[in-house]
Image 1 (cartoon, rainbow, N blue to C red):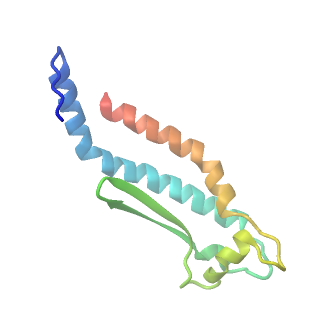
Image 2: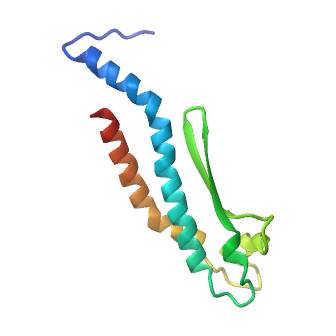
Length: 127
Protein backbone atom coordinates (compact mmCIF):
# COMPACT_ATOMS: atom_id res chain seq x y z
CA UNK A 1 0.00 0.00 0.00
CA UNK A 2 1.31 3.46 -0.78
CA UNK A 3 -0.02 6.91 -0.15
CA UNK A 4 0.76 9.91 -2.29
CA UNK A 5 0.09 13.43 -1.08
CA UNK A 6 0.65 16.74 -2.71
CA UNK A 7 0.15 20.25 -1.52
CA UNK A 8 1.76 23.57 -0.83
CA UNK A 9 4.52 23.32 1.73
CA UNK A 10 4.51 19.53 1.83
CA UNK A 11 8.04 19.24 0.45
CA UNK A 12 9.28 21.73 3.03
CA UNK A 13 7.60 19.70 5.79
CA UNK A 14 9.20 16.50 4.50
CA UNK A 15 12.60 18.25 4.50
CA UNK A 16 12.08 19.37 8.11
CA UNK A 17 11.20 15.80 9.17
CA UNK A 18 14.21 14.38 7.36
CA UNK A 19 16.65 16.85 8.88
CA UNK A 20 15.14 16.41 12.34
CA UNK A 21 15.51 12.64 12.07
CA UNK A 22 19.29 12.90 11.96
CA UNK A 23 19.35 15.04 15.09
CA UNK A 24 16.52 13.59 17.15
CA UNK A 25 18.34 10.57 18.61
CA UNK A 26 21.33 12.61 19.76
CA UNK A 27 19.13 15.23 21.36
CA UNK A 28 16.75 12.66 22.86
CA UNK A 29 19.74 10.94 24.45
CA UNK A 30 20.77 14.24 26.06
CA UNK A 31 17.27 14.72 27.50
CA UNK A 32 17.19 11.10 28.67
CA UNK A 33 20.64 11.38 30.27
CA UNK A 34 19.58 14.49 32.19
CA UNK A 35 16.45 12.75 33.47
CA UNK A 36 18.47 9.65 34.41
CA UNK A 37 20.98 11.80 36.29
CA UNK A 38 18.17 13.54 38.18
CA UNK A 39 16.59 10.19 39.08
CA UNK A 40 19.96 8.77 40.19
CA UNK A 41 20.72 11.79 42.38
CA UNK A 42 17.25 11.80 43.95
CA UNK A 43 17.38 8.05 44.62
CA UNK A 44 20.82 8.45 46.22
CA UNK A 45 19.45 11.16 48.53
CA UNK A 46 16.44 9.04 49.47
CA UNK A 47 18.67 6.03 50.20
CA UNK A 48 21.21 7.96 52.28
CA UNK A 49 21.50 7.56 56.01
CA UNK A 50 20.75 3.85 56.23
CA UNK A 51 22.83 2.52 59.12
CA UNK A 52 22.88 -1.02 57.73
CA UNK A 53 23.71 0.08 54.15
CA UNK A 54 25.94 3.16 54.33
CA UNK A 55 27.67 2.45 50.99
CA UNK A 56 24.54 1.55 49.06
CA UNK A 57 23.77 5.07 47.72
CA UNK A 58 27.15 5.15 45.96
CA UNK A 59 26.21 1.99 44.07
CA UNK A 60 23.38 3.78 42.23
CA UNK A 61 24.37 4.72 38.70
CA UNK A 62 22.87 5.10 35.24
CA UNK A 63 23.66 4.32 31.61
CA UNK A 64 22.05 5.56 28.42
CA UNK A 65 22.10 3.91 25.02
CA UNK A 66 20.80 4.29 21.50
CA UNK A 67 19.61 1.12 19.80
CA UNK A 68 18.14 1.60 16.35
CA UNK A 69 15.51 4.29 16.79
CA UNK A 70 15.19 3.90 20.57
CA UNK A 71 16.91 5.77 23.38
CA UNK A 72 17.05 3.94 26.69
CA UNK A 73 18.30 4.57 30.20
CA UNK A 74 19.04 2.06 32.93
CA UNK A 75 19.12 3.48 36.44
CA UNK A 76 19.81 1.57 39.62
CA UNK A 77 22.36 -0.06 41.86
CA UNK A 78 25.41 -1.60 40.22
CA UNK A 79 25.78 -5.04 41.78
CA UNK A 80 29.56 -4.86 41.28
CA UNK A 81 29.82 -1.89 43.66
CA UNK A 82 29.77 -2.19 47.47
CA UNK A 83 26.29 -3.02 48.75
CA UNK A 84 24.83 -2.73 45.22
CA UNK A 85 23.27 -6.17 45.54
CA UNK A 86 20.92 -4.75 48.20
CA UNK A 87 18.89 -2.83 45.61
CA UNK A 88 15.91 -5.18 45.28
CA UNK A 89 15.82 -5.87 49.00
CA UNK A 90 15.77 -2.17 49.86
CA UNK A 91 13.34 -1.09 47.13
CA UNK A 92 10.80 -3.91 47.53
CA UNK A 93 11.46 -5.28 51.01
CA UNK A 94 11.38 -8.90 52.11
CA UNK A 95 9.07 -11.03 54.21
CA UNK A 96 10.97 -9.73 57.27
CA UNK A 97 11.80 -6.17 56.21
CA UNK A 98 9.55 -3.44 54.85
CA UNK A 99 10.43 -1.73 51.56
CA UNK A 100 12.57 1.38 51.56
CA UNK A 101 11.38 2.77 48.25
CA UNK A 102 13.81 5.23 46.67
CA UNK A 103 14.13 4.44 42.94
CA UNK A 104 10.40 4.30 42.22
CA UNK A 105 9.61 7.61 43.94
CA UNK A 106 12.58 9.28 42.21
CA UNK A 107 11.27 8.06 38.83
CA UNK A 108 7.75 9.21 39.65
CA UNK A 109 9.03 12.66 40.59
CA UNK A 110 11.11 13.12 37.42
CA UNK A 111 8.62 11.67 34.89
CA UNK A 112 6.58 14.86 34.31
CA UNK A 113 9.77 16.87 33.72
CA UNK A 114 11.11 14.23 31.31
CA UNK A 115 7.85 14.23 29.35
CA UNK A 116 7.82 18.02 29.20
CA UNK A 117 11.43 18.20 27.95
CA UNK A 118 10.80 15.52 25.32
CA UNK A 119 7.78 17.47 24.11
CA UNK A 120 9.87 20.63 23.96
CA UNK A 121 12.53 18.74 22.01
CA UNK A 122 9.92 17.67 19.47
CA UNK A 123 8.72 21.24 19.07
CA UNK A 124 12.27 22.59 18.76
CA UNK A 125 13.23 20.05 16.09
CA UNK A 126 10.17 20.82 14.02
CA UNK A 127 10.47 24.60 14.08
